[in-house]
Image (cartoon, one colour):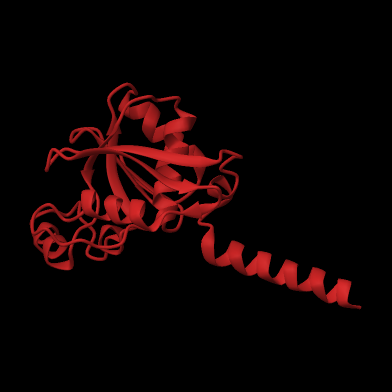
Amino acid sequence: MSKLLGRRSVLRLGGAALAAGVASPAIANIGKANFRSIALDNLHTGEKATIDYWVEGTYLPDALHSVNHILRDYRNGEVHAIEPHLLDLVYLLQKRVESSAVVQVISGYRSPATNAAMHEHSAGVAAHSLHMKGQAMDIRLADIPLDRLHNAALAMQAGGVGFYPSLDFVHVDVGRVRRWGG
């Protein structure tokens, strides 16, 4: 009986972890690597860093703090927690397109004030953008054509994907699967 309860508990915990912590099957099947690293270049602040953010099954708090700082709202300096699964999404996307380039970040976190000001001046900025929750990034990879990056992000079915060729970036987020732009 205790083995059965043990198995049920494990299954229940596994299901809860899957429901709470994994944004999509693409991210769930991230691979068997012992660490995950992301190289970021914030194009607005000039800050660059390569950060090992996940080691042996654990997100590293100090590394996530560094990511939060680099992806802060560059307009007002406000820092917000970035969803770790967003890092996993970008990590996987970079692997999928076989890029060795640094992830060029056009936009990470946006404060509500910044987002409201941008929304007022552009129909392309969502009033309730996931950037305000630390769940979205606008990116490009110097060694990958933008349309290829866009198509790879769409194929992952891991969240929202926006295509902004005239602005030279792809938006990725860990919200519901959807697409726009082009």
